[in-house]
Length: 451
Image (cartoon, rainbow, N blue to C red; front, side, top):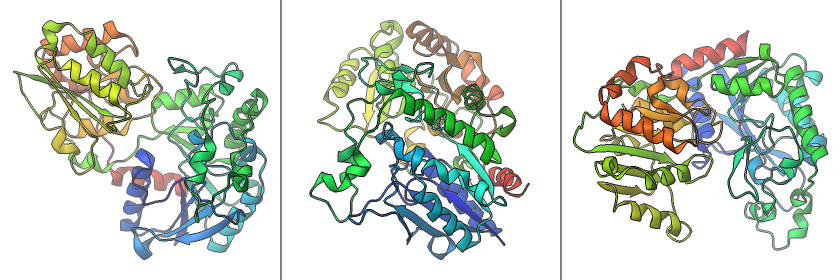
């Protein structure tokens, strides 16, 4: 039986690992059920100890003995990289972790490696085919880490408003997250707890200059092109941007992620409510996700249509730190039929929260590769109005449900068009993509593992 290693930066049972961690758990569960591979899991860049030297330890998993899971502790390259995006010197220069990694691969007889990112690993690890040429290497690109040390090609830092980064001038990278204090993040992870920062100076010292950022981009692209058997981009738009950034076009395939909610795909509107029109934003209170654009758009919306719309904002918040957002949302209640604020969602209550929603909104301002929340809303019978950035619009490819990102007038125009022409909601499904279920996705992955 072939032995497969799946890599992701965080712990396999980390509920805060985001959409990638959910995806990884899903493919592991499906692979275990099919029983065709011995499956190993590895993460790195998450845990630090007083000892300071890198080592690989075995860890518990929610899959019991069906999955062997390991962790590289004290990796010199901290993950997630967005919390340490400017400290890339160790990523470019460290070779000690690659030696550990190679020994691990040899000792366990692993023949296929599926990287779901390389955050937490120095770049030298990815050169493994130079040292072990028989290894099959698959890289799933869930974000833009190969092009951007912050993963998302989005710059805000000291800027009042963020924007998508064109990477023509690497001095821009030095302005991104300039004020971040990486040391606090690392200290919070150390076990046993450390009292003095100087013991972690090797991890928290920031190296920041345009030459390093240029090297990060050029060397990562070069290694991907020469050392990886196939790159899987989760949307056509992501594939296009990776190619524009230097990844070989012949290396990249579009591979829409498999998801368990695909089994529930309705392909019709779950609600036919015609009295009060219910619109939902589900996601994070972040600029690049379009949350503040959405609030601004609601504040400027024509009151003649607003009075007949009920807004559902389903986003995690904290009463103290999100006072301004809560105040703005409460103020909207004077204008709209109703505004409901719900403090986040789980996989268990998501379907219930969406049962009366006429239209979901995915107002991203960045090139969001393929938002899981867009897939989930469609699966539960909710048409989605998307910006033209990223891959969400590929799920329906319907011009009536796409607006120009960041354009308030176009957003309101498209929303009004849908509001006054409700037949568009039913027409949405004639264009919508059939979502990829886990069995279909695993068949595709096996083709890459075995070719």
